[in-house]
Structure formats: C-alpha cells, structure tokens
Image (tube, rainbow, N blue to C red; front, side, top):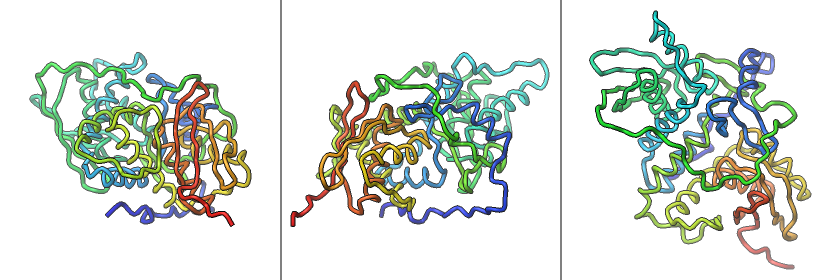
Length: 380
C-alpha cells in the first residue's frame, strides 16, 4: 500500500488569534532571502537554497518515495544529513564559541540558536563521559534528519569523530547515542548539483516574505497557518540522492513513467527521480489546493504560489503547446527538478481534472518543462 496523503491533518486556524510571532518572523525574514528565480537562500553558511515544507507532508512524502522504491531510507537520510550538516558548519561564519567558562553550555546555546530558525528542535546533552555521549533532540522535526544534525554538531564542537545510532519515541523526541570513532574519516566536501542553474537571478524577490506569518510554538518549533514547518537544504537533498543511488541497481523502472528526463543517462537516477516526482505529485493532489488556469500566462502565478513560496523555483515564461491544456514552462531555477516537476504535474492535474505527463530538459534559458495530457483527447 502507498501512503495516503489524504490522512494529512487539516490545520485549524483560529482567526481571532495573532498567528504571527513578530521577533521570529523578523529573524526568519532577515536570515532567508526569497529570490527572483524562485529559490529561498539562507544568508549564511554558503547560502544554500532552502525548501520550507510542512513536517507532516515531508514524512508522508518520504514514505511514498520508500514505497515506490521498496526501500527503507531512514538510515541513508540520517547519514546524508550528518554529512550535509558537516559541510554547512565548516563555513567560515560557523565557528563555535570557545569561552573559558561554561563552554559546553554556551556552545549548545550556539547550536540551538541555529536550529531555532531552521525548525529542527532543541539539542540537549544527557551524558558525556569517556568518549561516549547521549544526546536528546527535543521537539525534533524528522528523526533521521535530527540524528544527522545532532552527531555533526557534536563532532563540530568537540573536533572528534563519533559513531552514532538513534531511537525515537514516535512523537517528538530522538535519542542519539554516540561513541568515539578513532578511524580517519575525510571531511565532507562540496557535492556536484547535476542540474546546476546556468544564469540564476539571486536578486531579492519582492512582495510579502513567505515566512512572515511564522508563529513560535517552542524551541526549534514554529508553524505557519497551524502547520509545523521545517527547512531542508538543496545540499541535503543532493547527498540523500547520492547515498540512495547505489541501492537501486536491482530495481526496475516503471514501464510507463509519466516523466521524461532529457539528458539524464544514469539508470538509477532516472528511477529515483521518477519516485521523487510521483511522491511530489501525490503530495500536491492530496493538499486539496485549487488551481485555476485560463491562459498560459496564469502559470506564472501558479509557479509563484506553489513553487516560489516554499523555495522550489519559479515560472518565468509560459506558452501554449496545444488546445488541450498542454503548456511549455521555463524556470530559471529549481530546488530539485523531480520535486519541482512533480508539484507542477499535480497543479496541472488539479487545473485540468486529468493526469499529465512531463518532459524536462535543461538549456541556457533554464529548466524547460512541457506538460501535456497523459492520454490523447478524442476529437469530436
């Protein structure tokens, strides 16, 4: 059975309550910059493109990817998270404080100040003795990502390597156990983004900031419209993809995929992008969002509403391909092509009330996406 996204809870919004926490919203607006290309960049730590998603939607999206691939991906996500966090924390502006007094206390405060705005809970130390440590991520967003962040942060402030495993209470807390690792492990390096944007416009976008309605619920826990939010960097998604690919060699690609990825030759990558795109399409359909498209130009608004507001990209041009809703879209940038195209497939399906296929390609103009009906329309 696949994941039923219809089980997602519908946020209950009390219109009489002040949904915005001013200090938090202002801090988020200062730290995360929406761009004209439709990405959201963090204004520190190498300025990674960052995607903001409801925690419940990410959990079910990941479950659908696992179902499509018939794999359990939690451990791979945790290791990708640890490596991505190590790379992120190695930036010049991420040096932990080293005071003479109360060092651990102040270093944990430094860590949690970072996790606060990213929506990943609060790190606490339960024990630390003889090369072993037990950490608690309280009010974590996702258990695998929390475990990876925790071990990487601990290695950063201790300047040592640790083996780790984690357990989770299934609701809000992850317990991470670490043991000193004497092996020589190379430092995390930059990863290659297969779909690198050619001429991305990183100028700040106008209009209301997408995080302006953030409401503080607790340390490292904030919501928008009643839904818990979390941030995911593009670097994490790339590393997650690379750690997953070696395990897909014995998997078969769907005989009739609804996406064609022009220029992607790696058979395993095609399988993974198919799974990611389909999970993203299902996530959008289940959200119940209404999409109204009367002219090709309306897709620019669709792109802003459903891509740019979360950091997945933006549509800068649209033109009709046929009389049945077929459209050619140009995107200057994409957080991840499969996630972005899956969302667009869901939006097209909601607008046209029938499924679509997509053809993705890359050019100097950006990402080219052609959306057409999945089945031929009978002429009358």
